[in-house]
Amino acid sequence: MRTPREYSTLLNRGIVTPEMIASVLYSFNKRVKNIKEKDPAGYKKTKEAWKRSGSEPSGPAVTDAGTAKIVDYYAKKDFLLITLCTPTVRHIIGGKEYYCYRVHNSEFHFPGYAYARYGLSPPEGLETKEVTDFKILGEETERLLSLNFCNKVFDLVKSGEYVLADAGACNGKK
Image (cartoon, rainbow, N blue to C red; front, side):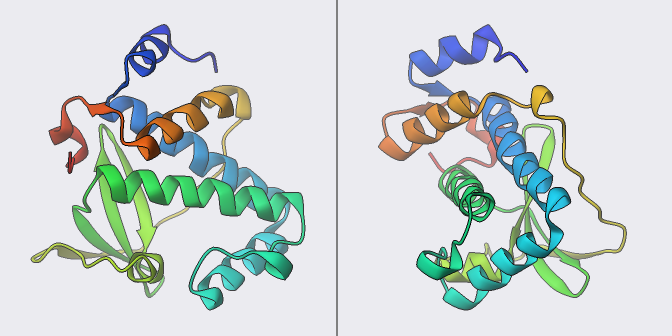
């Protein structure tokens, strides 16, 4: 997908919007799902190593390029979510806890084990909902924002030199 001109203009001014963030999160997440669809066993191994390690896997846990990409994409997605947003509801999916973030018109899930690993506590009074029908598929890469643009947004947010426009649409923190 060609990056919308408005996104590039805003990024060059140091401005991020909830719509941009949602598009970047979606692009990182769908890239992971694409890897998962191509190599389900490798994806499962990476997720288990990440859970056991208590942090991002490295060294022997990252054994191939696909695994390294999974770790990179999820780490960037996690960073953007916990830096810019707060969860709006707790979902129980298949017996596992996830924090659900509403960003612009999209929802993103963050696993409970990862939330705790980052030393975060959920906001008090979060509603809990059981989710029974939950399947996420990949997306054609051509329909995603470019990885170059996504990385630029990540780098800008990481630098702290950004303005979050309309923070309410991201349950923003800044």
